[in-house]
Length: 446
Image (tube, rainbow, N blue to C red):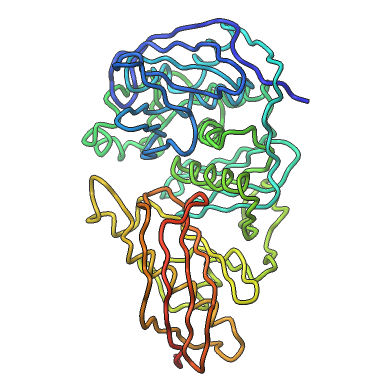
C-alpha cells in the first residue's frame, strides 16, 4: 500500500510570473490527508482557494489556468508536475499574485523547494487509478492517448509545424528519474511566435533567463541545452502536471504527438470520466511511424461497433467544420454512444461568443442527428445511403458547453417505418445531461 505524502514544513520562493510579469512570492505549505493540491490567493480578500482539479481548468492557451468564479491562477503546470513527479499528494500553494514565479522556466527551483521542505508520510492510502481501457484525444495535429500499463510511462514526440527540432523521449516515471531526466527541462518557444505572444500579453515576464527561443535552425539561450532532447522533455514535464488534475495517481502508458495543454487537460477529463463511470473508449490507433513508442494496442478496431473518425467519415457525408462526431464509442442494438471533443478552435466560437465561448445549442442538436444517422446507416440495407434530418421535438438545453468539454452523445432508435426513423438523444458532459431532443430523419439514396 502506498501512503499519501505532504511537506514537512513551509518553504517560499520569490520571482516574476512568465505571462503576467508581476512580482510574486510563492509558499508551499503542508496539508492534511486527502486535501490534494490547493492554490490560495493571499493577495485577494478572503484568501480564496482553488483545488487543482480538472473541473476548475478555465484556460489552456500556452499554459494551464485554474478558475473559480472571478479568481484565477495561471501557469500551474510546472508546480503540479513537481508535486506529481516527487510524490507529494497534499499541499497548499500560497501566492500573492495570479501565477507562480517562473524561475528559470523549468521545475528546478520548485524541486529545490520540496527538498528543502522535506516530505512527511501520512497514514492515509494514496489514491491510485490503473487505466482499464485506452483513451485517445485527437485535436488537429495533436494526439495524446493512454493505454493500460502497470506503471506511469510517457512516450512523447515534439515538433513545430515545419517539423523542426523533432524530438522523441520515453520513460517510466519514478521520483528519481523525474528529478534527473525531466525537472530541469526549460520552457521554449519559436521566434516567430514572440510577436503574437507579446501582443496578447502572454510573456510579459519572459526572457532568455526563463525560456529557450528557437529561431530557424538556431537555439537562443543563456546557457547550453541541459538535455539533448530538452524540448520534448519539457513537453513531458507539462503532461505530468496537467494529467495530475485528474485527481489521482495514474498508472498507464501515455503516447503523445505534438501535445498541448488543451489536449493534456482533455485527456485528464476523459480519465476522470473513466474513473467515475467506468466508461471505456475505442482503442486508439498508434501511428506506425512513432519510433520507439510501444504500440500495444496498435491498429485493432474495437468491438461493439466502435469507429474512429476515418470510419465515421466513410459513413457520414459531413466534413469540417460541420462534422460533429469524433468517435463512436459503441453500438449495441438500437443504441449508440459517440464522442465530440469541443476544441477552442471550433469555427463557431469566433462569434458565439468571442469573450464567452459557448457551443451553440443547435450544434448539439446537429450532433444528435448525425449520431442517429450513423446508427441507421450501419444497417446493411442502408449502406452507402444518406440520412436527411427532418425535424426535432422536445428539445431542451440545460447547461452551457464550453471549450475543453467532451460531449458524450447517447442516442436510442425508438421507431422505424420504411425510410423514416425516429430517435431520442442526450448529450452529456462529465456524466451530466446538457441537452436532449427527439429527432426524425429520412434515409435516401446518395
